[in-house]
Image (cartoon, rainbow, N blue to C red; front, side):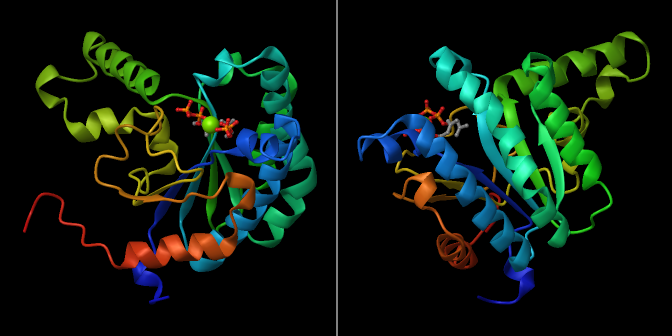
Length: 239
Ligand code: IPE
Ligand code: IPE
Ligand code: MG
């Protein structure tokens, strides 16, 4: 690994393949989600050790409500289990919890558990562990647009002053500025698509796809992705 300056500030992960991991060995999909929590723990700690500033984990999409109610219920319970078990370890690693997503539809106990973890880790100064929970990229852009329109209608903002920065500042990821744009996007399980994840923020990110299912993902695989990133040439349209 090269020195810190080649470490991406913002790594975002589409944690995919929990269900297939379990089903391939004849188990219930829930066991895959359960095991996926261990991978979250391993990868968060390794990312923090490597000097990543923000690690965003896609944990539940606005489209995941389409799954059977039993699975949705289990997925809504996962943050409660995760934070109950792992907040002390996050503290030890100086990791600060954040969330992006539409909180209104999240059940009360889940919302409270997330808010508690955020508040307990709010003074930590290390990596931000940012959970995308009930997150959807298109809805995020629609809501940001509404905020901009409101500001124009109220006279706070002139139409001619609407810029990319203004719209970007209204996105849910304003909470992780200045690292809101993704540097390295990782997706596990062999699928190669965005699934409505950070559409604006991935405009110039580097993509890394792993065939491993998320519960099999390790800190060493994260290192492989970081090494791969270090050999990319990011040109942003220039030469
Ligand atoms: C990722 O694993 C976790 C969530 C989407 C919540 P999946 O549940 O999508 O697992 P597969 O893709 O069906 O294997
Ligand atoms: C993306 O995975 C969402 C999360 C990892 C939370 P999905 O499994 O929901 O995505 P698709 O359906 O394969 O596109
Ligand atoms: Mg999936």
